[in-house]
Image (cartoon, rainbow, N blue to C red; front, side, top):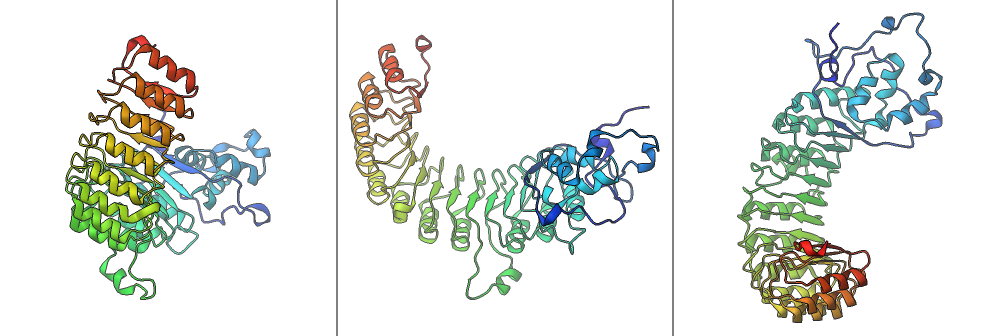
Length: 444
């Protein structure tokens, strides 16, 4: 008889007759709850149900397995280590395993990653099964990660919005078919949503509440979205107008990433700085229309700002760096790779004002020399990561100064730099844990 694969045998929801699900002993929850990954599609009957092997198939003379000797509590704990596809297979073994595998605490997170998966259908079936004990909602489901599920459409997001009111995390990176309309419904129906990753979704140009949700909003709390983390990398349809709406609706943002949102200008950055006073991390890498004016606006965030990336924003100069470091003295991470107008003067401003800096990337800043590195070494002894890639004016002297003063250095990039073997060995001797990235075969 031909063997069937998992994808042909099961699709998440065996249709056993209703029975009260397993409840942990003494009212205690299982000690472990984890994510469940789904990487394969599964077979569904014509009526929308999922087949399961009947207990009768096991026969009266079935031998006891070690699992038959374990308590329900122990079996559930073992199940908590399984990925979703294996957990669903367990649901097809017998009635006991079916009940235990659908214990709600095993389903606080679902993770799916398959470009060919009919994800809309899987979401509909999964959420239907998980909401059988409650009135059409999955109260236990808090995190959904669908990155790479290219077939996800607005229908799938509508299912999430309708059945997952307790959702806190949603990741749909690479799901390029979804649009603003469905996303509006998700943020409106999921008031606890804090983490949203829509990387590579070009149709998303704005995030706001639906008109109905706006009308129902409590005047005391305003019309706000509770997002704290938002990644819109490669959402190249985003413009300043859309960013203005996002910033005004998501005032609790602490981390915002707009990498390669090429239509963003200083005006969009100004909206963010004026509305998101809690912002700690911000990236506008490869947004080449951002200039010193935008950097000066970011300085309004003051000591709150800890992470900033302006990679390849080639209109940023020492003037912008000076404005930033004057007010953002607690900056820990700065990436100005490719900002070719930044010189030793900008590096000196940074070193003197942000002396608790942990990570700095000045790669391809061809105007930076050993003088800037010496000031950096003397003022930033806590530096752990430094990239000098393609800094042609850097020599052994600057690198040795860094190594002698920043002994906690963990990563140093000197690719395409004119550094000798002696300087390389000096770094290895003074920074024991440092990983050195280089292009010189003589260093090995």
